[in-house]
Amino acid sequence: MKTNNLDAYIPLDAAPAKKVPFTAYDFGWVVLCIGMAIGSGIIFMPVQMGVKGIWVSLASLIVSYPAVYLISEVFLRSLSKTEACDNYTHIVTQYLGKNWGVLLSFVYFIMLLKGMLAYSSTIVKDGGSYLQTFHVTTESVGSAPWFIFLLIAIMVALASRGERFLFKVSGPLIGVKFAIIIFLGIAMVPFWKIENLGLHVVPDWMAFVRDVWLTLPFAMFSIFFGQILNPMNVAFRKAEADPDIATYRALRVSRIAFVILLIAVSFFGLSFLLSINHAEASSALAANISALALSAQVIPGDTVRMLSTVLNLVAIFTAFFGIYLGFQDALKGIVTNVVDRFITRGERFNASLPKMISVISVLLLGTWVMFGIPAMLLMQVTVPVFGLVACFIPVYLIFKVPALKQYRCWKTYYVLLFGIALILVPIMKIFE
Image 1 (cartoon, one colour):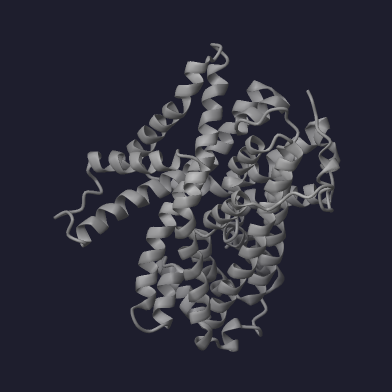
Image 2 (image 1 turned 90 degrees about the horizontal axis):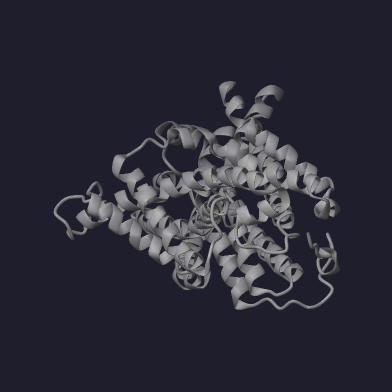
């Protein structure tokens, strides 16, 4: 297998050997990464932080945020040494063979499937509700099969147009979403009270460790955009003749997005911590309401209610577009891995493959929404599966594949330990 001297352009802790311009294409991926990260994680994180207190919150952020940064780096570097780069399955297959390729890709697919099912259901149900609210229909059509499949087909058709089209469609919407988050953080400033932080409340050691552990997923998902990393990696590999430069550009995008999210989300979370007390946060958690709903109780008027509606609409569409890139990548890889075992793919098959993936996606997502299949099981296994895909698999590749040997360092071990922590989160929940 041919390998590349990645460090000739991308030393582990230094700048590339030659100048690589930052283009509008790079900026588009920064925007998509930010849009992927701003979702349910950031909306529910302040409530969890308000319940657990400032010390637990700080500890979980100190552990999680460096982990998110390192996960992105380790994940992208673990995919950088293949001759070709078509999709996630194709990359893993080149490293480990077809059997490992399809197995690890299936785990990757399950991680993305949960998000796709959740967003598809929300889009259909909210879409039907809004049509009724604005008197386009006399009753909600969210349960009508024709509406379910039509709306999902439209969404899949748009998302399948490629990343450049999504830059144009999602870019402005993500800008609105990001602006609302910043505005809410600033709007809460007049309601800040230092006593809301509960600086004097220090939990006992066992409770502290348990609560930090349980808060890790909330902190992590508030700025995580791992679902879009491999589609971005594949896109840059196709755009750049030199795979080393492609990997550098992907790493640079992820780092810029991380820094922007780190600043914005940290301010957003701190602003809520200073604005709500423990009792209000506990009440919100018991009622299963988000930070947006909680902020409406703090900020008078209809401003927050209006922003919540806008954010809800924008968030579900941009998140669907963002995660579909990874979902399509995973599904394409599994299909080609299976097909290649029986036939030799020709140009006609390859040309029709994108349409085939779109049809499979519409049927799968539409059927899920139409029958209202409970997503509880997938929700319960999401965090451990994420630990496997984002932490264990990249670390395994780095230690298994000789071409990736140069990346065996403390960063890899940190990602591995964080992955173990994520897998054990459901067990820690028992002791809460």
